[in-house]
Image (cartoon, rainbow, N blue to C red):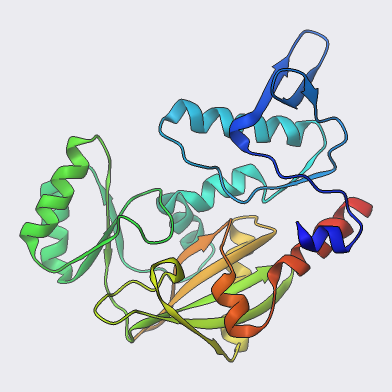
Length: 277
């Protein structure tokens, strides 16, 4: 918001849960509450879909954003791209389809299939299919642990997302992309005694040299999911780089602290440019 205000752009903070969708035979419009119409919006920057407890609530919020798109509002990132990036299974399929390297991954519904896959791979990560900031991800090398976690997911009607653990160092790489520009990259080091590299869970960040190879991977991954900006998480393995995830609504506090670059400034410039063009 501060980045937009510095550019003399009128900006307002809105919660998706407060947006209302209105539809009639003559028109459709989006408002806040019962009456306040949002007719003067040029663009919407989506910084998350919020806490969603049911599929119905998720669909409602997605549909409101689609309605704004249909009304000619620039939605950043596009709602279909946000959904694609949020779904770890679908996003990996899209990345692989464009020739990018991803970790060995299996998505199953039967807990015994998950156990057999874990036995074959040795050390695995079990993740929620939809999640953020590393919460809910479990590192396991014991088939019994895989069974217990998988069984819990199965009991709640959730699929089991299993990924082979091939990290070469106790760190990963986050690259920030805005439009056609790769802003920079940083290492995210695991806190002592843990394996997760999420800044929200205490990871230490350090600026790193952005190589042409990393820049190409990150930009290609962003384009594969049709994102206008992204945070691309990349792992180092003995066989080269792999993409763990492409974030459509990335946090960048750690990146800004490590690199001195504030992505918000570049996002604001990109949106102002698109509105004017």
